Length: 99
Image (cartoon, rainbow, N blue to C red; front, side, top):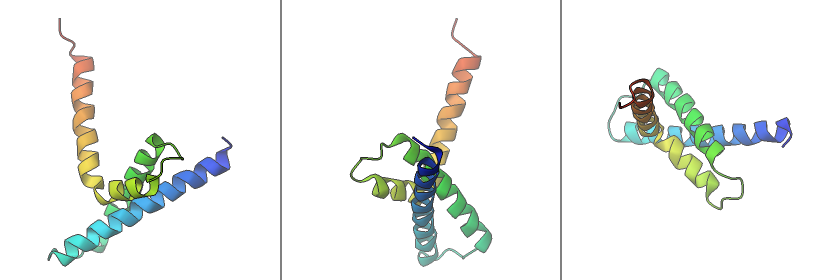
């Protein structure tokens, strides 16, 4: 695949993930949490990264691909916590193999 369509696809996934992050942040505000512009921006960036990450694993012809990417942006913090925990567990297994 040429580089330009791949970059467009990644940008699209990051944008859809970012929109999921915006929706999550609005939900938190509607639930009564105080709005913070700094946390809003961080949440949108992390959601865009999570959308890009999930978009890399999904083939382009999946029917609900955009919806899955949007949901991954909505739940970006939980997904990144999971990836971090599993990464630490995997790293510990590699560094400390059973004898």
